[in-house]
Amino acid sequence: MAQHFYDYIIVGAGSAGAVIAARLSEDLDKRILLIEAGGRDTNPWIHTPLGVGKLLTNPSVVWQYFTDTGIAADTPKVYWPKGKTLGGSSSVNGMVYSRGSRRSWDEWRDLGNLGWSYDDILPYFKRLERRLGGDPSYRGDAGPISVTDVAHRSAVSQAFIEACHALGAPKNDDYNGPSDEGVAPLQMTVHRGKRCSTAVAYLKPARRRKNLTVVTETMVNHLLFDGRRCVGVSGVRSGNPFEAHASREVILSAGSIESPAILERSGIGNPAILAPLGIELRHGSEQVGENLQDHLQVRMSFEIVGETTVNDLMNKPILGAIEGLRYWLTRRGLLTTSSVTAHAIMKSHQQSSHPDTKIQIALISGKDRYSGNGSGLDQCAGITLGTFQIRPVSRGGVHVTSADPTAPPSIRPNYLNDPVDRQHTLSGLKLIREVVAQSALKPYIKQELLPGTAINSDEALLRYAAETGQTSWHPIGTCRMGSDAKSVVDPQLRVRGFDGLRVADASIMPTMVSTNTNAPTILIGEKAADLIRQARLS
Ligand SMILES: Cc1cc2nc3c(=O)[nH]c(=O)nc-3n(C[C@H](O)[C@H](O)[C@H](O)COP(=O)(O)OP(=O)(O)OC[C@H]3O[C@@H](n4cnc5c(N)ncnc54)[C@H](O)[C@@H]3O)c2cc1C
Image 1 (spheres, rainbow, N blue to C red):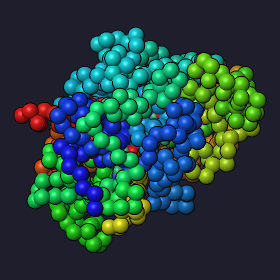
Image 2: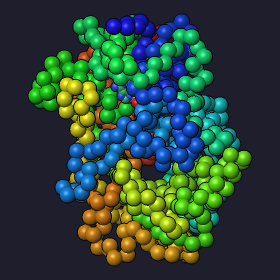
Image 3: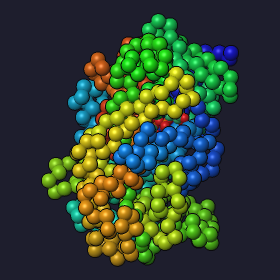
Image 4: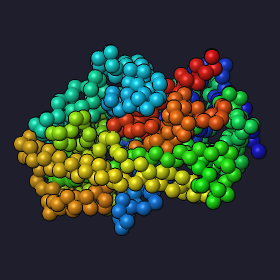
């Protein structure tokens, strides 16, 4: 068996893992190994923003997970793709760049996670981003991740902004500045019309360093221990057994499904779950895989007039070719977007004390587009308005179902289990109808396509949510960080009960940061690298 020796091993080259590997490799006397289950990020659709639609069902770049059950007992299972390539989900995501509210970060501190308040983490946001022209007390202009405004100018998107404003959403010049509340064109992880993943922004420059080794198509199955110390990983590389040893630390950055799965396969988890699978218990930790949270997105679509949308590009080859040429020559137009162009972080009711809902506009429409077996785009020009409750209450879990690493995991998001979540989802759908009824947007709307105006009662709308709601691809929380003894990792991200082992990815988030999760996860990578370096110096 091939054996390899390093100071640090990072498992998973995604939004957090690529960052940690790049930052730790800045210390040239340290040997770093970054292990990625997927392949290199060579698929050209990864780098073309609108190409995201081509990636979501491509097993060469995504893990194709499904939830155990549908949202209701008789509705289809929900498709849960996750990135499986260099850059991880940052290479296949929608590129929306959003930090979340100060309030939701401060909640992490209030839960006992010292060092994670908004003021504590702000320097890391500034360090990771390159945002030109922002307020320097909030924004960074010299970091690896390029953050640019959506490059496609669209009249219907502007009308959406005016419509949300008419309903009370402030126009927000910088929702990654002092406040996230309000309506705005999106900020994107896009550089000169191309996706700026963590593989592009962090790994590409770092790979010139001889002390950084990146191996792809290598699946880590288990952790190796010497007593209570984690000393390495084992798995499979190109069909052959693979082992690597770390003299200092192993860092799990395999994401919210695989990081807890690796712990469980290594005997760290709830004895009641591991024993029936024949997995020998190394350390009882009942919270591993629990506390799963996600944004359930429910979408309504509308036929529109007066603007070309992605539907037209796909349905009319000449138009598609012209837009392709425009992108190639000018790096502008619809291909520079994931189709989503603007969002509003709003209060769903007058009585709400804080923003609780996100609504976003996408210049595309079709039935069942995200289920993994969608029936294509509408023939007409169309838009989709999607909504999610920014801080869901329902909690679920993700667990291994077998000691065999190739067995699919059990995923139970428990969407809409909590009545508060049902109420917010309903309010979000009603708010969308109010938005399209505003005088700014109304002239563009020819008809509501989905669900259709006949679906009107609360009961019917909730049924629609259960039938068509999809993940917003933001699973978090399954290796919860906390200061309490039950948490999986402590606020330094160290796995409780062990030395030399941390988790650093979206799974450590104790609660939802009230927005899309890529920027917060990159931040977790930046902060983890600092914590690891500080531990070495102390
Ligand atoms: C389709 C999609 C759209 C999204 N859109 C947005 C958006 O527009 N804006 C936003 O902010 N967020 C978005 N997100 C969410 C965001 O991208 C994720 O929250 C974030 O990337 C998670 O980072 P991570 O480091 O936890 O995991 P990932 O980035 O998923 O990285 C985990 C990596 O570990 C690898 N891995 C897993 N298991 C193993 C193993 N056993 N051995 C070796 N390697 C392993 C995986 O292949 C993967 O590369 C989206 C996500 C998806 C999937």
